[in-house]
Length: 164
Length: 352
Ligand SMILES: Cc1cc2nc3c(=O)[nH]c(=O)nc-3n(C[C@H](O)[C@H](O)[C@H](O)COP(=O)(O)OP(=O)(O)OC[C@H]3O[C@@H](n4cnc5c(N)ncnc54)[C@H](O)[C@@H]3O)c2cc1C
Ligand code: SF4
Ligand code: FES
Ligand code: FES
Image (cartoon, chains in turn cyan, purple):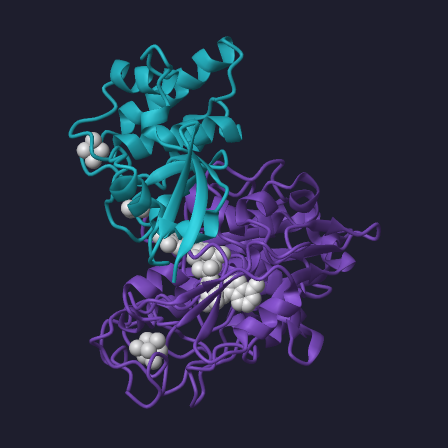
């Protein structure tokens, strides 16, 4: 069954032919568009490694059928840094706070943090940040740095009047 | 995963017609269905995508205080709707204690009601499971069943229903609106999920093609807003299903309880409304002895289905704790750790 969908990915329009309706958004990004920054950890919604912003909201790409998202706007880790290569404040804060070791979970953590800051429910309470980031597991246990990085980036973005 | 036909109906009538074909299943966010399809547990031959159906994504507050929530409203949007969380704070707390922020952004109200059990043998196609394959047997009996049911189970199936959302909803008297081949009908949520009996494969009252279009809460459910909590014991702090959970809501008149609502999660194949416990509280003084008596009544019919006798006493304690926390008052804001039983109860011993 042929199915053709339109997606905007990191600002660029794409038309993708899906010969097979089983393709997830995660597999589409990695295997059709070669955007391999978005990681496949569990493929079952349990780890958060595949987190992207789908129409501005953080979502697990592994449990999203591509066919159901015709017309969607997707932001992945590859689209986060500015055009001149300057890092997004969340990326910069992850480096400044040593919020990673192996880095496998990091794209998902960063995208989740961008989503959390845009949602605006956590405020400056580390407990709310930890709870809000609990959908992203880190096998290296970099959680302390991740919480600090999210709080720091959020503070800097508020200072600059940025939402995301 | 088996392959399937993907159809995107534009109207409810088209959706019902498309889903009435053998092998068809509705697809909402897919956060449960796709997981089951990847494991070969669900094998639909046609997915009927409900995401483009008009009018199903609205939260409609009635002037009298009731609410109608469309089946496509996302779990996160409902929990963060200010009027909804003010009127039905235990429902918002339950939603925010479930899954992760990413999953709540996607998961729909309809999908949450219809999510399948997390019994590990149901998920494992190499195990015998009457729910997955009627008549095959039940490997959970005599297997790893610490987390299985203590109320309403049968020899055919001892699984539990995993939804948090449904627990306060059933306590507050929610109604499910259904569109089907025979038209529209209402079913009280308390009658929506079936106990296993001899046919655990029949999970709800839905017939082939039936679409959940909305869930309603009546105006009187908002009268509990000042004293309403959801408590959930998990095996880790967050991002885990309930071992046992309880919703408790009180309507106070002076120093007496005028009316109480109690339901339990993680104990049965449906969200479990505890009418006897509610009756034990009507007109009573809100103290530890009263709460314990209500908790005893809530679990009066409980029986272990395996290595899970601990869940019965745990559930009693969670009911009593939820009542004490509800009496202490609904917090201004959903707590940083929603539904955590480890937060202190003002003026009460934590060891209820
Ligand atoms: C890692 C993980 C952790 C989780 N933790 C929790 C938790 O702690 N607490 C909790 O409560 N839940 C938890 N969940 C489950 C989650 O809440 C459900 O997956 C979600 O609510 C399902 O909604 P959906 O829109 O994705 O449904 P889908 O997956 O699209 O559908 C689920 C089922 O509902 C049917 N369906 C969907 N919409 C309709 C409709 N309108 N009418 C009729 N049938 C319909 C589908 O056919 C399917 O059978 C967790 C899930 C994951 C993956
Ligand atoms: S408890 Fe129910 S769901 Fe689990 S294996 Fe037995 S029949 Fe299947
Ligand atoms: S890969 Fe999607 S949550 Fe693990
Ligand atoms: S940095 Fe290694 S998994 Fe998180």
